[in-house]
Structures are given as structure tokens and as C-alpha cells.
Amino acid sequence: MMDYRVYELDRAQRIYAAAGAACIGFAAVWLLYRQPLIALLATPLGWYGPKFLARFLQRRRQERLRLQFKEMLQTLSSLLSAGRSVETAFGALEGDMAMLIGDPEAPLLREIRAVVNRLRNGEPLEVSLSDLAVRSGIEEIGNFAEAFRICKRSGGDLVEVMRRTSGLIGEKLEVELEVGVMIAQKKFESKLMMVMPFGFVGLLGSFAADYMQPLYRGGGLLVLTLCLGALAGVCLWMSRIMDIRL
Image 1 (cartoon, rainbow, N blue to C red):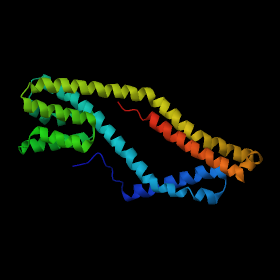
Image 2 (cartoon, rainbow, N blue to C red; image 1 turned 30 degrees about the horizontal axis):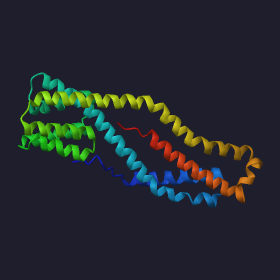
Image 3 (cartoon, rainbow, N blue to C red; image 1 turned 120 degrees about the vertical axis):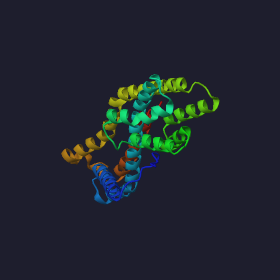
Image 4 (cartoon, rainbow, N blue to C red; image 1 turned 135 degrees about the vertical axis):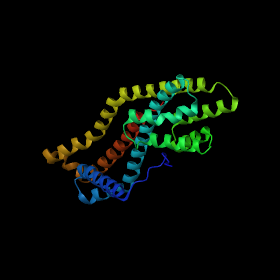
């Protein structure tokens, strides 16, 4: 089964990510210093390209699973409200979710099929859900699996507990989605602010070369290096501020 906490890039993705990061590093440093030999010193940044791409794709896959899990909770709550047992409801989930998602190979549909198959082989449902919670690395799935396990052990009203748990987790995901929409514009503005200094210096270097010439020799190189370091720190700080998780 898939481990959603790790994303393995194929050979082509690694090459493209490394080459892209190296080119971006070269272009950014060249715009500041206008010296190819100094810009070549930034090409080792390509080593970090595959790591950033793998992290981006891993988080996007987890986010997709989280949104699909939210839809699953709503569907599961409806099935439980109709009087079905939890095991029977999970058996009917795939058909209902397939119509909502539209992709038969969606990660959540594969997980539902695996849970149903393990149920048919006599494995307890809480074991399958706990396994999914560990592999997904998603807090909401872990909370759902833990609530289900505790309810099974305590012998409480399983259907009512699952209905309430599904509702609470679904509300939390909706709030996170609303917050994401609210800060989407700010994220775009932060990315634009990260790129603007390079574009501004590049335009000055192209259209006002004499004005920028003192920065390309002597103490000007030190000033550019300090500015580049400060800009890198600000970019890292902004990315952390924009990474909001509830």
C-alpha cells in the first residue's frame, strides 16, 4: 500500500527538477552580479530541486486525500443515518464515492477497496483504519481511526459516535478550506514579492548599466552578497508565515 508521507520521484522528474533548480539559481545570481563565473557557483542548488519537488508533490497528494476524505465522511454519515452498520456502510462507500470523485484510480477509492477486501478476509475494521492513518500522515484520518478504535473497545453507540466524529472532522476541514481561500491572494503576493527584486535589478542592469556598474566591482560585490543573503532570509521567513495549518 502507498505511503503518503513519502513521494518517490522517477528518473525524469529528478533530472528535470535538478536542471530547473540549477537554471533558476544561475539566472537569479547572474541578474544580480552579471558575471557568469559567479553565477555558476549557484548551480549546485540543483541538488535541492528534487527534494523541493518531492515535498511539493507529496503535500499536494496528501491534500487531495484530505479533501476526498472529507467527502467520504459526509457520505459515510449519510449511510449511517440511513440505518446501515459501519461495516456495511464501508462496503457501499466505493460506489457512492466513485460518482463524486469521477476517477476510479483516485487514492481514496483504492484505500476503500483495500479496507473492504481486508474486511472480507476477517480483519477488523479498526486495524485497516489505523494502518491508513499511519500511512497517510493526516491528522484527521488519525483522529477518525482513534475514535473508531476507542468506540469499538468501549462498546458504545458506534453509529452515533461515527456520525458525530464525521461531522466534527468535516467541519474542521471546511474551516481549513475557507482559510486557504482567504490567504490564497496573500500567498500569490508573497511569491510575487520574492521575484520582484531580481526582476527590478535585472531591468536596471539592462537599461541603466552605467548606474549599476559600481555594484559589479570592489565593495559593490559585498553589498550585492549581503542583499542576496537578506533576500534569501526574507523569502524563507515569508514562506513559513504563509504556511498556515490549523
